[in-house]
Amino acid sequence: METTILIVDDEPLFVKGLKHSLEQEGYSVECAYDGEEGLKCLKKGGIDLIILDVMLPKKDGFTVCREIRTYSNVPIIMLTAKGEDVDKIVGIEIGADDYLTKPFNTRELLARIKALLRRTRMSYDRNKTDILDLGELKLDLNSRRVLLKDKEVDLTTKEFDILYILAKSPGRVYSRESLLELVWGYDFYGDERTVDVHIRRIREKLEEDPGHPYWVLTKWGVGYYCREMV
Image 1: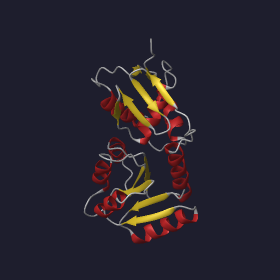
Image 2: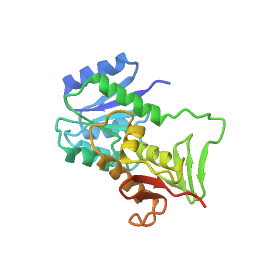
Image 3: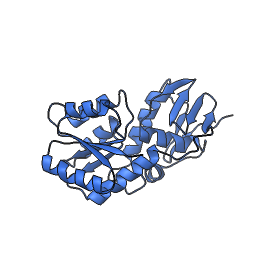
Image 4: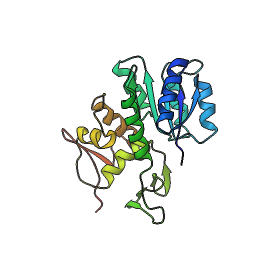
């Protein structure tokens, strides 16, 4: 099945070069040059991953990302010419899966795209039910859906990956460093706050009282773990 990547960036020469590089790798590529056009392209369907610039006409990348996350979990890699940590944290908080600062090495971007798509399309046998069952909390590994008390919880790609790692080994404590390595799969150019941001977002979606979590717990000074079933 052909993989389609949407580039949303207002620099025509940059878009042209990146489009060529992606097509050389076998990807189908669609392009949009402002935030509103990007949203329209996504809503047409068939987009497997988005490369989204922060600085865009009409609607900036942060606004676009927020809107996308209200109805889609499509993987998003955000781009910016800025290098400030605050921009990276904001991007992660609103649901971006990854972040690159311009200029970047195209091979690095390609590696991140492949890693994201690989995690999004975890290869399970579609002919069997592959459910991680923790009682009221269930993770469907085929469809990457999370059900809590039979109600679906809408998680982003990275949020699902973190929850899956914790849930498949209840009681095992994972350090922030371990989660960064397992989920991102390469040297991440952020810091450990990235994990904290994702954990907070998971708790906000999963817990009745995020301030006193039941499912995703903290081992102070060590890391995070999932509650063991009794």
